[in-house]
Length: 343
Image (cartoon, rainbow, N blue to C red; front, side, top):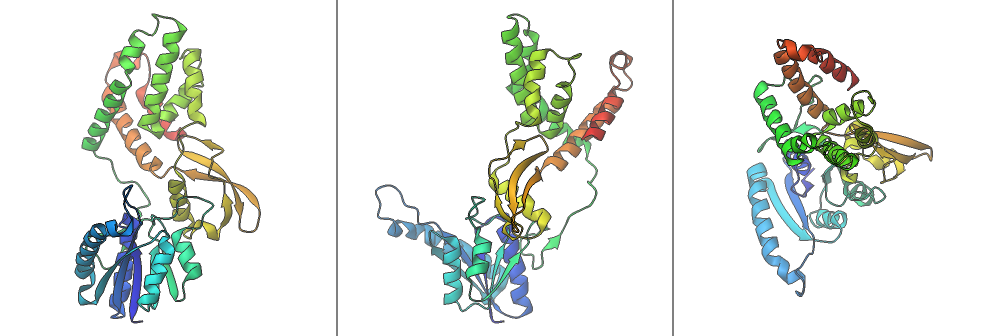
């Protein structure tokens, strides 16, 4: 092995693939060529490519410094222009007579639609040399790192109270933004109109605060003994009408779980979710063998957000346990315990 080519779009996951490639090249004392593809964009009224030169020069200088830091005299930067990143990367590989082309499996530019092949997949099908698609999901790297480190703790780490204090401030800010205190202080002044408006504000605030608070809204939507019917109707939408993940987020989660490009498992995935809830959403899909299935995809930040918010609620329950007036109305610890089990 004499020459390794690796593609980057300067995303975090692409940086992990570059670090992996640098380690491989170092092990074989091979040259490392890092290629970046720029889209041939131009301002209206210009003739296109000539206007790109300053941007190309700047990108090349920046990339060259990074590659020299990474691979020294064995490193080389290539910045090229092309509408199709996969074709441009393979053109560089041919010109450099690459023995191996390395790409990351997530975060690469070009994978915008479920029904279009992504960059790594197209490179693996079109290349005339060995291709390694590095599973960069979950890799933790640092600047100058030669070997990516896998860092996936099985148990969540303890949440420190300063972090919870910051989260509490965020909750207060969101409540103020949506005018919850004002809305509920005058909710009865104009009958149902104000009640429905207040319910919409509450639902919007819970959506913004994330899965834990959406779950609280879902629970309240099943308690007509506690909240008015207008609020129940509004909060019921939190069960399956939450703003969905983007297509790229869905693909990234899938490939983290599967460990391979999604096209290796599925023939097609319907980009429009059947339903989107607070913790996950579901899509129609067809497996590679033609079998029709439904795929449930968990929101990538759901676990972290839920653990943080439950930690905050546990702190609240602990600190409020000594207040008899509150305990006569509700048992905070029991409420938090029920919510934790439900989530």
